[in-house]
Length: 406
Image 1 (tube, rainbow, N blue to C red):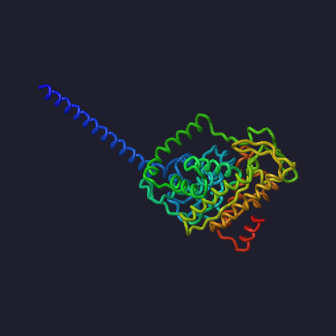
Image 2 (image 1 turned 180 degrees about the horizontal axis):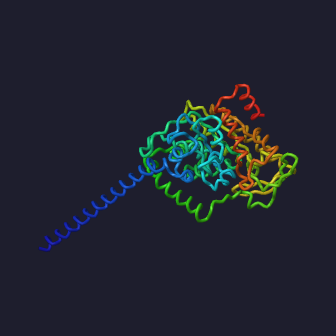
């Protein structure tokens, strides 16, 4: 009898465990089904008609579908802009719209207006070369289709905004991650990290976008309706000021982002190598794609200065610096970007001459957000890119590239 009772007890425990396991599986299956249904409802039904001011808070693939600089939900024959906050369009033009994106606010709108082409920005604030050139395009144009989204055709042309103001520091942080993973930061380690982490098109990445979007929207709504939309310029924590020669006047400006004037040459070139390896990945991924690198100078490199000392700022510090050091770093970084673009067989255009010409007569950054172009600045940048999209005469194109390499 005791053995029978023991066997009966074991059977009851086994049946209870089996029932609990089956119920757990049923709950998980139900949750998974609900999650997938919500994905389709949000990304296939809601986003095409959603308010445009939330679009910057959605993941990269959804972001492409919900931008206003295209004629339909799915972009056709479009121009893609890659990069960081300059490609995203941060600045006073956006601030004047209260942070909402349902109207013109950056170069993509200018390019669309001048060319009539669909224009899509893959840019996002805080992106370095690896994020802007590899991570974002890989997420928006995955090699393995993500079924919750309609298929997006590759762009007709790509323009990469390389911004000398903070891309170097962003790339150095990326190298720290590579070293932490592999114990090295040579070309092989960089390429491996890009392929295994940033270019991943896994099922998990596809279905993680709803959770990612939910978090980002909560953050946006908290910022917009509770704490308020605000702009923090890196010069706010640096006491020294700049004196800019604009026209016949001297304009006072806060400390400005510069071409990494506080970093050693070898650190700058190590960071530039991340740009080179990212370009090589992009060329392998899109071998026939017309790609143009647009070198965007920092505010410190745009204006003429009334003093031999300039005030710079960066995410890691700032202060007074010799104007000659900033000028030398600008030339070094620009020439390196041109060489690396040529090695990757992509076109190169330096936006410095056009932005400097505009900065001779008016301020094209700020006056609130001095880290980014304002309306006038984005119009200059947009016109420069639009000329490339439309295909300007060869002699003009060669003059532009030649000026970039002087």
